[in-house]
Amino acid sequence: MKYKELRAIVEYLQQFRHLNDIARVDDNILRAVFDKKEIFFDLNRSKNLIYMRDDFIKTKFYNAPFDKVLAKKCKKSFIEKIELDSNDKIIRIYCKKRGSYKEESAILQLEFTGRHANAIILDEKGNVLEALHHDFHRDIRPGKPLYPLTPPKKLDKSELEIADIEEYLHSIYKQELEKRLNVLKSAKLLQINKQKAKLQKLLASLEKEEDLINQADKEEKKGQLVLANLHQIKPYQEEFEGEDFKGNPIKFTLPAEAKTPAMMSDIFFKRAKKLRQKAANIHIQRENLQEKIAFLDKKANLVRNAKRVEDIELLFSKSAKKESKKDKNYERYNIAGYDVYIGKNKRGNVELLKKAKASDIWLHLKDLPSAHVIIATSKQNVPQDVLEQAAKLCASFSVEHPGTYKVDYTQRRNVKPKEGAHVEYVKYKTLSVRI
Image 1 (cartoon, rainbow, N blue to C red):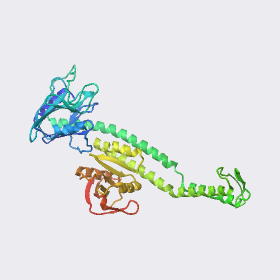
Image 2: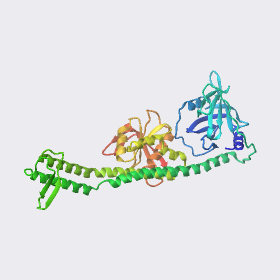
Image 3: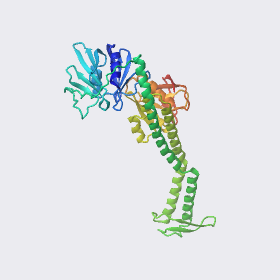
Image 4: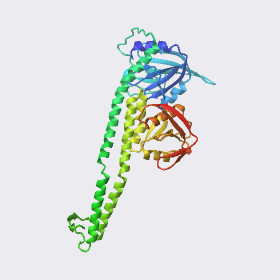
């Protein structure tokens, strides 16, 4: 951001007296609530921004040393003053917290300095308490003084007239959102298409049932012919040449690993049995791949229709990547610190029912076929916004068309598995979600 923009924003922020909440909501983004106004400080090194938005839903939870100190020193604090450095694009928020026995002061320094952007928490003497980034180019260590950055040689300090600062901050978000969404959608759709192509290749490579049965018939016929001609075949004979049961000439290779003619026929019969079993079960493999492809199609549709960056990032979190690498029949996402599991197919739904603990939350579309969703609770109460987001995922991965859907949820202990992934459940509540 330009210096003159920061100055206008700081002048706006100076009216507030309380920092009611502040926390990291993305790797490099802080959400701060000044009195009742939400402001976002984006310290991504590619682009530093300050903006306002009305569509925020918490999807990530951070608990690093920086986040703990930020909550301890700045959350629910009184704002003594907010200032902009006279020589650099640095905002300082002076916070004071009144405890039962003493007052504590801290300074939150937000550095909008391009690729060296940072958020640093200082004590009132200017010593570092914690920092978002500990860079090699600058000595930032807890307990040590923070040395100032070298100011830029040029700094545009001209005036910037902004008629409505809140409208201006909202417009910054909308412009950036459109750019980021377009880039992110293209990248993630390409990623999904690659995954889908691999599954389609596997699907195309599956043998047909009739071909497997024909192969089984041929192997069985060879076994019967060997059995009928045991007296003519010598041990370790390489080929059989003679007539089939219809008097037609036939020639085929005998198993080299067989020591006796009887073992040769046994090997042919075992091959035939294995091929028939494969033919009987190939539809399960085919259905499994088709369901995984359908799951990816729904995932791609979610990406195309996403209105927020967080909606896409949730689908491609580190948790989801770890599960997809293991090629499981379910995916794992993380919503505000809670692991959320979604079945990709019937097998995945069954696996989740077995995997879930009694206190975990189970979700399913009301009166409709649905992916099973599990929220791992660790015996904690699940926040309403986490339930709602999990319910949206449940509906999004279960239906083809947008609309309003009802999602039932209850603890896993109240769900009784029946045949396949069918269940009976009691003591449930219902959410309505729109997708």
